[in-house]
Picture 1: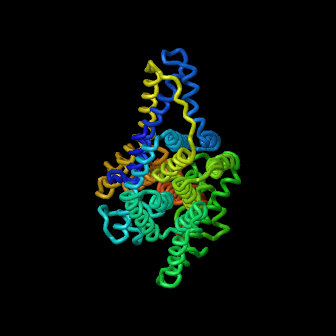
Picture 2 (picture 1 turned 180 degrees about the horizontal axis):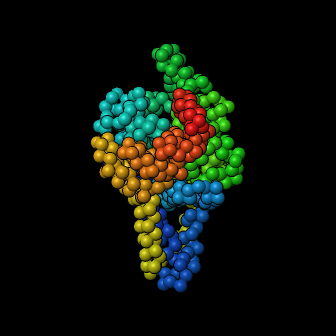
Picture 3 (picture 1 turned 120 degrees about the vertical axis):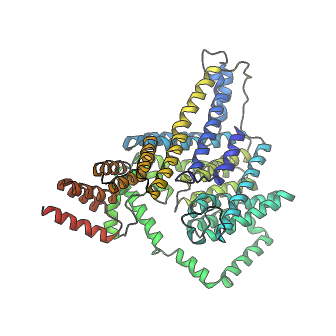
Length: 564
């Protein structure tokens, strides 16, 4: 189990694969395969003696082994959060999306539970893994900033490093989680490891500066202040001297254009700030409509367009698009999807964590780990780090390492099992294969088909594009909103209006786009079905279109159609 988690911690941040449309879906695929295998082994090892009427059954051994997980301080809150996710099915349009979220959160919880049982040598091994991974992704980020990259991306984000995460905001969440651990480790280790942690700290902080993500800067500052007070560094004269020197340099020697840029980034009228506030207000509308259990875990993207229209009218906000899958605030997101019940339980995980932490004397490593968790939580106010698999795994790993490292976790070995329970092993093997096939392999294959369809469309090979898009939709329906739209566009170009309408309807079944309703209206107009054309154009107007001229064109189309 340890090796599986160690490989996951190493591979998920650095993995990239260009044969899929989403070059980073490989991260989630790797995590699901490796951690699912680890979870099955964990269940077998911990429950082999707990199946009645089998040769391996032993009440004493079963009870003792079950204490391993229950003893974890966060086990109950994590289980309750999984229950809250299940309850969110009540209002979910697509239950498969709920179970996708549930499976990932279950695997994150497993990382926490497994880390409670590690020996000191394994703890050192996992820290070395974080060190190596951090160095690799940091070097890649620095190279990107200076214009060197071994992959030609669609954008370089203006020099903002995204490393192997695909987006500067995604990378920033990982940075603010790992930086505190790196800084504390630089002071905790000796000789070679100390030098490596110092190098990593410098690389990570440089990436954070070049990354230019406001929320990450604030999260880093909060976690840094936290470390300073928890470890009482403010009493260290050398530390204070260095800190004052850095502040002095920033105030008096930092270039004015950089200082102006930083000030501008925190301007409430800055476009990205206005956009985030708009998304938060839309999430709040969902919460008001479904306060207890939310719209369904993973179902925010299905509902966003339905709730954003009223907010847009009041705010006079110019849309980039009528549908979003994330609202750039982890807490609004959790509350919108799983309700107040889910949010309270989710927060209780971290409240329990810090309450138990401060009941004991905190050592340096635990201070660094908990500062990383705090940075993650602060960053969640302006982004969605829990949705980024490598970052989420790292945080749940830190939760377990803190608890295991700051106190002696009770571990009762239980009675030795002389006979293996092959029935349980076979059952878990079947569950593993089915789960991985449905949750990891099929979506991965579907994304390969998406990429193949896009390539065929660019080449003008429309029959192949249609074939690949339809295969993708068949394998991964709930994540095929864009694929269905692209399929509709291909059919429309070929003059197959009925095929286009059918594909567009798949797209809006998963995600309500005003733009797609406009396309459906256009198709019905071409078919001569005026009533259906007007109906869909009116829906497009209600949901809104990104450009003002598009809105006006649709209004004119409706006026013309009514004269027919």
